[in-house]
Amino acid sequence: MEELTTLVMAKYNYWGVVILLGIGLYAMIAKNNLVKKIIGMNIFQTAIILFYISISTKYGASIPIIHHGHGHTIHPADYMNPLPHVLMLTAIVVSVATLGVALALAVRIYNHHDTLEEDEVLSQLTTDESTQA
Amino acid sequence: MKSFGLACVVLLCAALIYSTMNFPDWGSLNSPASEHVSDYYIQNALEETAVPNLVTAVLADYRGYDTLFETTVILTAGFACFFLLRRYRRKPPPYRLYRHIETGVTLIIEQGGKEPTESEEFMRIDSQWVPYDLVIQKAARLVIPFLQLFALYVIFHGHHSPGGGFQGGVILGATLILLAIANDLRSTTKRISERISAQLASTGVLVYAGTGALCLLLGANFLDYSALSRLIATDPVMARSHGILLVEIGVAIAVSAVMIWIYYNLVSAGRHDEGL
Image (cartoon, rainbow over all chains, first blue to last red; front, side):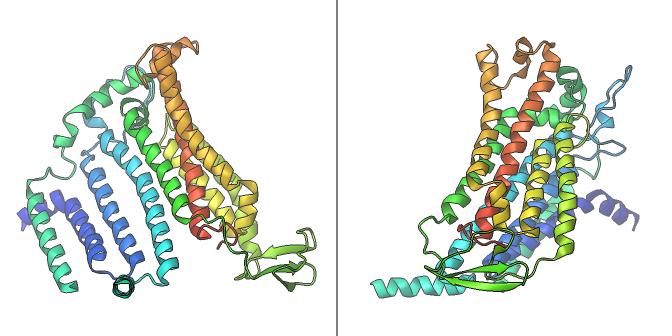
């Protein structure tokens, strides 16, 4: 039992990430509505962001902002790893940008086909092809 | 199909959870991510750039190229929304609605009819217009200046506290989106037109790239801000700090302008006529 507790304490962050990843991936694969697919993509991105941030933590460490003052020696163990924070800072803004483009595409599809359901769009496309041929 | 997708996802999740057994523990000091460059950044960034916030220092200085092209990605997203959605040669709407403010009477002006000028007496309203919520309008009016001040604080204090160009720029853009939601789209496009938002977005990237090019002109590498010490009378270390500030301002301008631009295009489906 104690082993299990230590295992959970050591790895629970990854399990949360994997669960979020699964939810996002399932939404992208199985959902029929395009907006729900976009929401799934955002959940997936959130999982990646959480993963990066969680590997940057160190036990007993502070946020990656150096305390001012003279005579301080700076130990790497006192501050979290700043690199994943930097990568995810840009990734968050890029995810906003991709969300904007995805929604713009969804708006175009809705204007053209009057629906956001994937199967209806597909059936409209196949009937178009058959009438042309 | 759905059950097949579910089976795939469950299998993948099981494999991933099994593989996490080899991952470093939560909060472990010697995880592979913390072993290589991160120690160098923590120990030397303050000395080399005079910026205590390591995230800002790494973002704008050590990984300056990454952030430059990240900003370009955001600008490209703004352009992509523009090209996907914007419509210029549209049919004019069959009718427009004007409201007489004093009496609350709505006039339907059909195409070709004489439209009243917008003034104290008449205002144009959206076709799905609901009477303005006074509380929301006044609260937004009260809150927006302070939010914008906070955004500027986040941008300019990013050297010493959590913050920087990306975060402050997003807050700045969000205040303008709040204005557009609380009033209507036209009142915001009157203040910041689409043309200005597009120009600002490009200007932000230009400020960033221009700072890098300026370093190049002064004889150093691209984005090596220590060369700026010849322009502003400081030592190379402080020059790097000032260079980071310049770059962050560029990022903030680009991010906030692109946020507004994408919002304009999305909310009116490219017509910039009637919004939410």
